[in-house]
Length: 87
Image 1 (cartoon, rainbow, N blue to C red):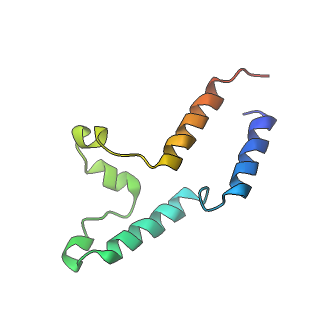
Image 2: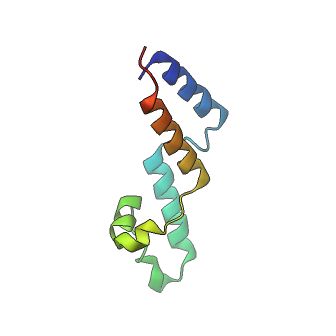
């Protein structure tokens, strides 16, 4: 990854820190919040990590999942950066 990409990434993180928090910490917080809003009998249906939750889905269910806009944007940008010409 070139210096320009690193500078751009830092600028984006500083502009929107809530979007670019450490993924594992943010995911754990969100999953714990979701779990706490459910009835006790359903709380154990929410796994501790995103990967464990996704691992319980069938391929058909995975194909119909909606991806949050900010995640789709991040993936699109990463794909563009990976295909940009090297300096």
